[in-house]
Image 1 (cartoon, helix red, strand yellow):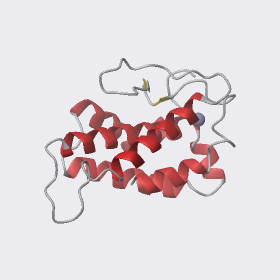
Image 2 (tube, rainbow, N blue to C red):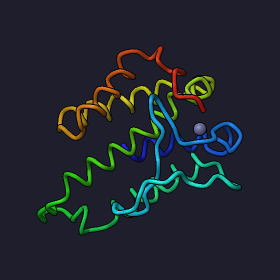
Image 3 (cartoon, protein in one colour):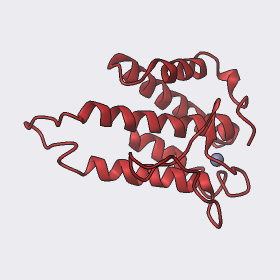
Image 4 (spheres, protein in one colour):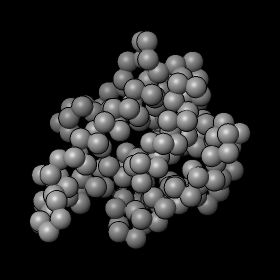
Length: 161
Ligand SMILES: [Zn+2]
């Protein structure tokens, strides 16, 4: 799931998702803030010379990569999973949905023009049904995802940028 959305976003980053096009990390009905550590207050990343969204999403992908390579979080086969495995996976998936939300709100037409919208829709549906099947999201987040999934005409009705 991470691999797919990181490849899709790579087609936008630097060309469509830029400092000029996206002034904050937002998506459908939400603005997203970054936390370097769980105990930190969520902050809006500074957009000085780099697109804030690009920085946010790259931070997110680095964070997921670090977790995926940490054997204490994702142990090798035949070992038991740590107690915080499920909350960690929930957090990863929740943050990944923010990338979809941003892309659907601000870059869907661009993805469509380069022939990637069907890949985005398929990847998003897979993520949604995975989250639903394994109960990996809270009701409010699920309702928001369901809204996007049910009605793709919602695309473009985002909070103001
Ligand atoms: Zn963007």
